[in-house]
Length: 194
Image (tube, rainbow, N blue to C red; front, side):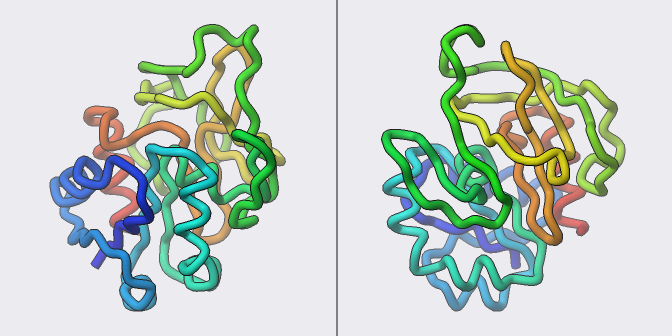
């Protein structure tokens, strides 16, 4: 079972459908005990960091101690950071050391919305069969600034930012694979097979 964690953010149904389509067995849950028996965990993400972290606190210990594959999508990836500067300063899960910052105005129109390319920075099984500089779909105003030790994919939007990160069994993607056509479905299939 792939546990899609419902912590008050949007986009649960589209990630549920996409995971089902690639052979996963997803379940949307609000129960910490479901995370303990899951084969994989998904932190979806359309929303704001402060309310998301408030609802995520009861799951924090279970998520951080998990040994199964865990993917954070968009806001879900940002919640892996040490802290976020979205609307103040907020402590996050501190799984991947770094700070979530707003794009500078010089980057272009904010939010960064639409199709953009991923430059694969490091080989990772989640990118199996996906060509370098493939396009994925983004919607975000903030990005994770972190060490290159954790970056497996970069994207340029006025600045180069981490669009995919990994540490141990944790994987984060800033884009929405469930809205990214064949490449997104392949990435989710690779995640299901981890």
